[in-house]
Image 1: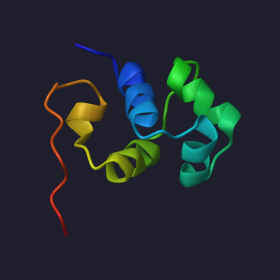
Image 2 (image 1 turned 60 degrees about the horizontal axis):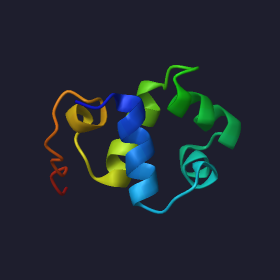
Image 3 (image 1 turned 30 degrees about the horizontal axis):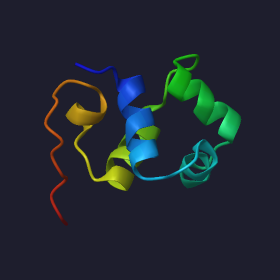
Image 4 (image 1 turned 120 degrees about the vertical axis):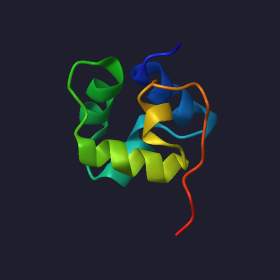
Length: 75
């Protein structure tokens, strides 16, 4: 099973987004986001939640706890 770092990168690349694009969405810098993807800094829970919403995936999938890419229920 993939690590959450690999999943974050794969989701970004599959969406044809740059680190800068995702960093802007999260309200941070490209350098900080790069550190998240490389495992140099821990990603805050608020960013995990935002990424789940952005990619429409469950937190379990994003964190590598399941390999089933479940979509979030619509509100």
